[in-house]
Length: 148
Image 1 (tube, rainbow, N blue to C red):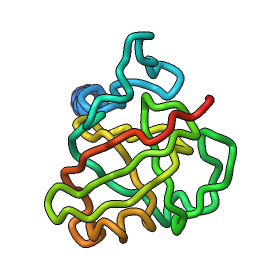
Image 2: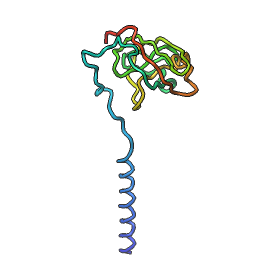
Image 3: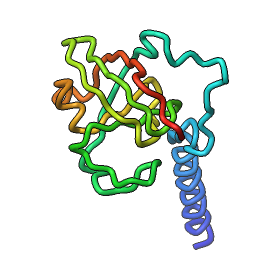
Image 4: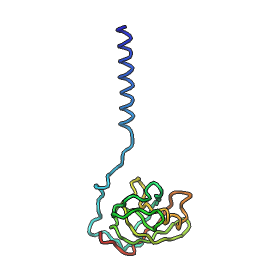
């Protein structure tokens, strides 16, 4: 009986160790919203293009929730989330693969996925014809800075 109890204890300890090991290896966000760094004073918003890189979009999961600007997210509006540009900024997004463009207002923070530069609303992604693919290489040109 004592030997059976010690075997169960060893199995429990090994199982617990495996679970802790798996949990410790899980992915976590590289930063939190409150840790986002703002650009230095000398940041050149007027450079053309302001930024190029990978865009994604968000829609139904966030539809009706509050954005970082405090407004309610409407997935059909022409809006976007950016980590650096001031909220309220107006930017032109160009899909570099098909040359479709859309003008959006920055009303949220994100994306929180490494390697992506902007998260577009579903409405903006539709205009850029990137909904089926989910991501696209884009160019961002600043039209007007917001007064965050």
